[in-house]
Amino acid sequence: MEALYVHIANKLENIRYGRQAPSGKILDLTELKSLELWRAVFAEFLAQVLFVYLGCASANALAGPKDDIYLIKIAFAFGLAIMALIQMFGHVSGGHINPAVTIAMAVAMNISIIRAVLYVSAQIIGAIVGGFLLKGLTPIPFRDNLAVTNLGPGVTQAQGFGVELVLTFTLVTVIFGTTDPNRASFGSPAILIGLTVTLGHLAGINFTGSSMNPSRSLGSAVAADFWDNHWIYWIGPIAGGILSALTYKLIINPYKGILNVEEAISKLRSDYPGSNFEDITLKTVE
Image (cartoon, rainbow, N blue to C red; front, top):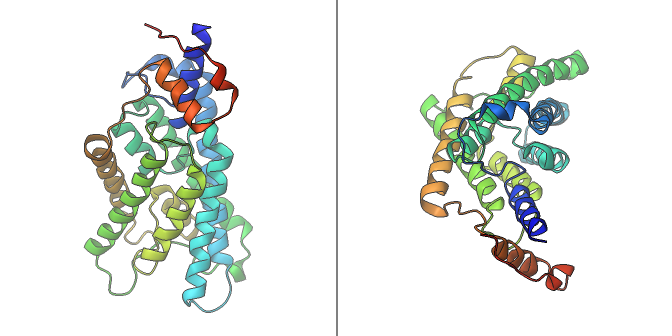
């Protein structure tokens, strides 16, 4: 029975960390032998392809004047896309779909360096594939600017960098908060993260296009062959993600994990009152 309790505790941690509970090893080459890792890497690749295509195609295909309603539609297009994809792939890879998120998770030591490097590589390749898919499947009369991100009129590079940093800091902090193992309930990270992406677009789309995601900007840049100010969409979001990781990890609510089986079962009981877990006799596993 004690083995069952340990299994339950591990499952609970893995769910809350997106199946990548910290192993205590920053660099572990044996992880490369794990089939689960390669499934997760492929999930990040496929999710990135779909995100670039679905998000950018939705924004590019919207007809009508570029008014407030148009911008709201774009905001919800990207928010709904990320919401759906996290729901689809979150249990496999954690649903990062964003190099800034992956790097932040590595800085917080929630994933290994090996996993982070493979995730970012998969995201970059996925973004390029998604960009070519976007261009190839969009008829010439409907191509517009293929949802490429660029600075708005009068926006300086410093301001653009700052906007992307703040928006990504907010997004990544929401991700840390919704996946924190010390929370009383699981909630729905997919919905909350998707709505945060929508909020980010509403706040900054007129200034930078509200990327918050280097690979998203890479995909549309590949499709449109437009690279003006592209560095902002890498440095800004990554800096925001790292700042979020350091702030959350060191100041707001440092990860403590689940220390023992009794605490794990207690959390299950509080989250699911009246369930079969009420009948479990707690034992301390040394």
